[in-house]
Length: 164
Image (cartoon, rainbow, N blue to C red; front, top):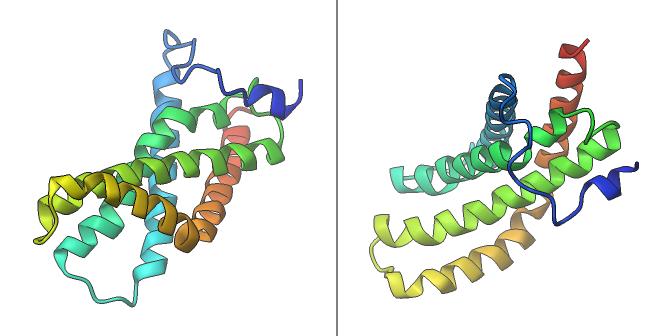
């Protein structure tokens, strides 16, 4: 079965082998790995920009939280050899997980900005989500794709080395 057949949209988010005692560890390892890569990418992007504490929360913490959640939900499949058996499939899954992390980040950003910045209200949250989704893809798309590819490939290679 090829990689495209395994990446179906109707697939369940929760793996079937939850009773396996190592399934939770794979999920946590994928979550940690995507969070580390997201923090590395965001740190590299904003390392020269002076920021207030609110900026650190919005542009470093929230992407890391989004990547952690996406890695926990969708990144575990990269470590499963029955779902991801080639490096190219892991690259595709990494980019897909990074895209999911960006969607989670856009939602968190729209909810968090009215809480920590003056001048924003809850009535603007839906507009903030749309603004973050559209302009964020244009501005952060290359970083998202590159970070997802790096995270997916390295997680796959790490998983293949540890399963031997």
